[in-house]
Image 1 (spheres, one colour):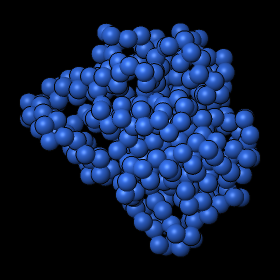
Image 2 (cartoon, helix red, strand yellow):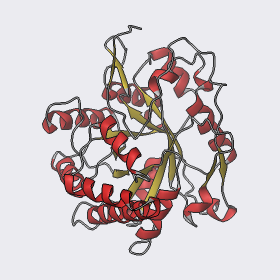
Image 3 (cartoon, helix red, strand yellow):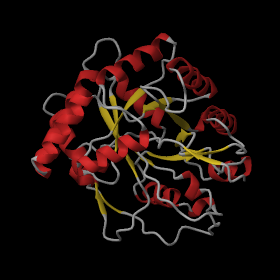
Image 4 (spheres, helix red, strand yellow):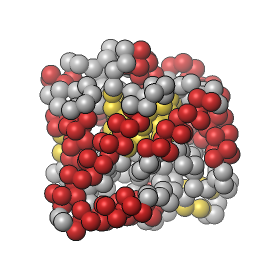
Length: 342
């Protein structure tokens, strides 16, 4: 593998630590998060293990649903990811971030942190819909086969946070097509959609072309990446439909819990927020943590409802980029439940 690596944006609210590049036999140095569920929650899960089927059933019934994205990496051994905080309705699915540069160094794919946590959730909570991410970075056909032989029924494909000119899979569309050829209909493939365009692509038209290639390659679902503008999300969805992209689109949502995290995310992703909105966030940050979090939950809820209430786009799914912080997600869900059943 060449060392000619270009750092690009994160895809799906991933924060990437700087690390050494020596190969690892495993990722045993880090802790795995612990989880808590209630029996009442688990009884309400759909019967299928295929996310595309579960999503189709929700949309057919016009029922709102949500998923969450979590990080397997955790340097706090006492961290508890408490699903009971979400209320009676569990996330329809849980996706797990793939840290391309780091995970490509782990020799045995089964020892990758996100894979270990995905298997743990899948084995212990049998009815949960689990969707590990996989990126193109550091991936070759042999390692891909090792991954597919783990028999996950759902996967989220991204090009990745890093890119190497000599990597085998240059684009997410190539990886989508290869997995579809290997797994046929036994797997649900979700891909990223960029409401304001990928930062490394010059025009929205070009970005839409790449998205169409992913759909033609066999993608089943689209999860939009970080966006702070309801109108940009609406325009993206309408553009997809005009280009005959008719697969389900799920809103990717980030809820900031402090101003520093928000500013860091914006710098990392190159995603812009209107100056008026940013000034509002700064104002409430100056008033204290509680005020900031209340405002952020209200602001994000308003954005979500604006999209969901738009006529003729038929959006029912939300996917929260949690950073392993469930508190803000819970606040938004509490607000949404004042208006919709979710």
